[in-house]
Amino acid sequence: NQEKLSSARFSEATDAFVEEFTASIQFDKRMYRQDIQGSIAHATMLCKVGLLTEQEREDIIQGLGQVQADIESGKMEWSIKQEDIHMNIEARLTDLIGITGKKLHTGRSRNDQVATDIRLYIRDEIDAILPEMTRLQHGILSLAEKEADTIMPGFTHLQTAQPVTFGHHMMAWFEMVKRDVERLEDCRKRVNTMPLGSAALAGTTYPIDREMTAELLGFERISQNSLDGVSDRDFAIEFTAFAATFLMHLSRFSEELVLWSSAQFNFIDLPDRFCTGSSIMPQKKNPDVPELVRGKTGRVYGHLISLLTLMKSQPLAYNKDNQEDKEPLFDTVDTVRGSLRAFADMVPAIIVNRDVTYKAAKRGFSTATDLADYLVNKGLPFRDAHEVVGLAVAHGLKTGQDLSEMSLETLQGFHGSITDDVFEVLTLEGSVSARSHLGGTAPEQVKAAIARAKSEL
Ligand code: ARG
Image (cartoon, rainbow, N blue to C red; front, side, top):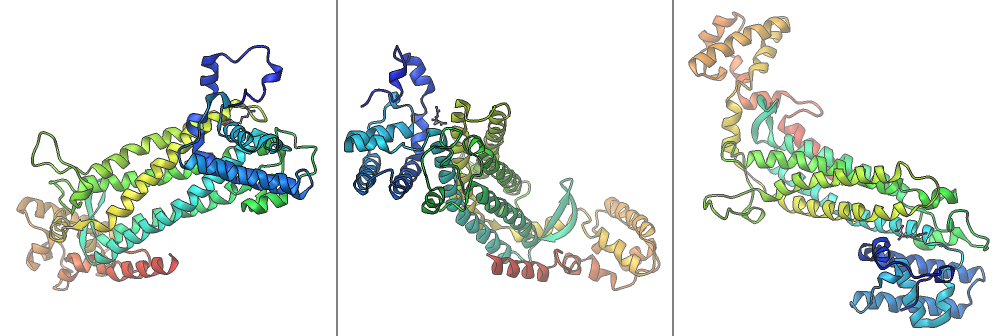
């Protein structure tokens, strides 16, 4: 391998520890494909504007192809002396094709190169994540469809509030994921901006054609200021903010799955393949997947704060601090992809214990609001109706009866306007199907929401 590229200016070799301390090759080699892709486009542009001959361009592209093949077959020898992915690839290229390799860096700096690589990398990841998000959405929809009529208790303060349909509950998760998809798509627009041409910070004296390079790399925009081009990491922060929000949603979802799969709730069964046992307690089946996703959310929050803090004090333009953007970013990508895959696999396989959720909805006077609404329809002001139903609930608590189990006579004792038709609203089915408007929990509304969602996907 070559000596370090900037060696002429130095009168002594870099301290061995400093060399290791400042190197990033251990982790930034993850971006080798994007680095090579960027270099191929750059060389193509250099040739078009007359800075490389056709032969030189061909040698460079062919050499870069060889480097990529070496990397992918595990033959590449990474060197800490070459510091990072950019210099490792360039050094290897020069080993392979000789002096022409040294021309590749014309009109370019590692500063705009690395900014380009990260953008290409995130763009690739977004394009892999989006279809997985769609798969998760389909998984949620399939469960919602199966359970559109299933009745369960809806909660506020984790206390039984009103009956809802399980499908409706699932469609709430669908809405959250849908917003996350929108956030990610929006983030992609700004990621897809090309900083190449900013060079070190001030631009370059060569007659480069930035439009051409951008087109070759599929960038929709070109950065408009070279200082900003090399120092902007907003796009990585935005991606991580998307990830933090998405993981926050998956973590809430996880929390419900953990609760619901407990013996005390027993609303759902998670298929065995998503659970593990205990090394000591033979009866255990633990909901490891949702627990882990809930736990992993913390590290993504941490990465978001890391990146924000990394940027907050940097003067323009590039600073070595920026090298610290990669590990948080890479781990964010891995965490999103792992958690997303687990959820997309698991959600459609959830088994709902319909009898249990139904019985649970019957407990806790979940139709009390329906009785109050009934009295309002009979002419009572809502506050008075609220009071009457409060008395009925107190009675039910004493006698151990649900409202629907009380006799007509008993109910009439709380208010004379109550008649036989009250039992229609006191049933769980009556309660949910009465909430039939856009966004309501009635099965027919849930089915309509599913149909809308399907036509959008
Ligand atoms: N490894 C560096 C990074 O990750 C690449 C850019 C280095 N540029 C420089 N002038 N030292 O940011």
